[in-house]
Image (cartoon, rainbow, N blue to C red):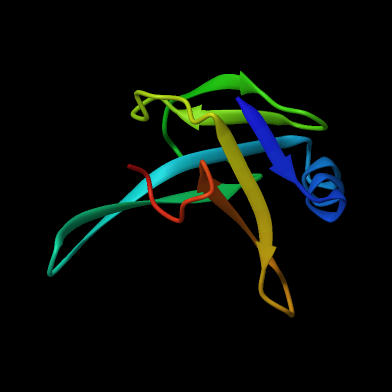
Length: 94
């Protein structure tokens, strides 16, 4: 798995412990169920597996059966930017 992250993302994750946790969040809408990714440097109470990373360690929720070819990580927001993860460049998991 290749991690795509700008230098400010790497610096942020490293300054908060050097670990990034990624897990799915599902929602329903008119077209069915969509699964988005959540990302944080703090582990929620779930099981994770280490999948590597470049500049920091990445842990995926064990419920994610597949590993993406690319995991894009960005910062979103102005005051206190939050981490956002994208699966192979998509905002949702397919």
